[in-house]
Image (cartoon, rainbow, N blue to C red; front, side, top):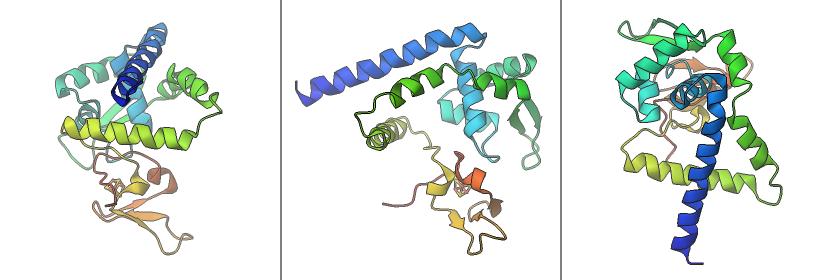
Length: 191
Ligand code: SF4
């Protein structure tokens, strides 16, 4: 098979996998956009759990995202509170019900199937998918939303006993948990 044919088949496989995951999502009374919002809020750091950042992450409009968030709040999955950093915005957090629901996320079935494929180098697969995602994000003019510890503004503290790290862009302390979260302001270290 040619490289182009293989690439097309890979794209079709990714598309079919996505549809299969989505077909399991309806069982829990949430639509795909609402699942994506819950997953994002669980992964994002405190600077990024806002409706505007969520809209950027999903490549969606703020109006559409707002409808999803209103519904999630009414159903008890998330809480919205006035932001202390930006009076015009709100902070998004999962409720206990939201966290419990993410425990039965249909995406975990896909992760289990991936983990069962022991013959491949999963680190290589993840690196490949990251590269493909990065190209798609660049084409759409979006932000990378990478992990904090891979950001050029991430500064590990010299003394781990007193603090873990600091963000030089936002001038804020960062914990070990923060370092593994995704961020709307993340900028990868230059290669
Ligand atoms: S170091 Fe980068 S990714 Fe981490 S909080 Fe700061 S801007 Fe965001």
